[in-house]
Amino acid sequence: MREILGRRRRLRLWRKRGPVQPAQLEAVLTCAAWQWPVIPGVGPAAAGGGRDRRCACPDPECAVPGAHPFDPGILAATTDARMLRWWWTNRPTAPVVLATGGKAPCAISLPALAGAVALTELDRMGVRLGPVVATSTRWSLLVAPYSLERLGELLYVKDRVPGSLRFHGEGGYLILPPSETGTGQVRWERAPGAGAVAPWLPDVETVIDALVEASTSAPDGGSRLAY
Image (tube, rainbow, N blue to C red; front, side):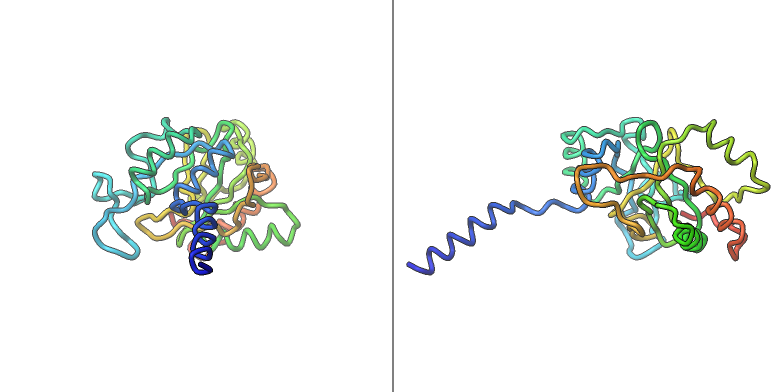
């Protein structure tokens, strides 16, 4: 009788926890709670393994393999949890693509080595940072929404803006963890805090100088564009 009670107790505990959700589905439902519109990415082709895998899209020379939206397009990005569940139930390993701009976060990305230098300098200056996304080749700092006009004003006064800097604003997108792309895993270098409240984001003006400087002084001249 003691063994039967023990089995029942363990069963009740398992039911209370519930089934574990796939990592991507958990991530997109968190984005929905934060009002970050997302959409499934195309992902890498199924064949092969490791890094430098071909993109699942029809373009054999895709510049960002597995790391972009395809069908549906970026305009379909949503915070509707029912739609997100449907998408990721059908494609549970699909990359998580954030539609940037509007009321959603924007981002600035730069080569990984330059990104590490920039974060060190920003930490030294005591600048408060938000989440930072990292791949094997690039780091992306999430910032508060900005307009193209405001960004243009900030960049106009710079002597030089390296072409390796990318600005993910209105109409753009960014791949979020725990996505897998053709060049490998996407991860958090600075993870957002847990909870229902959306992470705090810095203003673009507080980080742009350090990102431009780090990209300009990068060993490769900051010219590397590979995602």
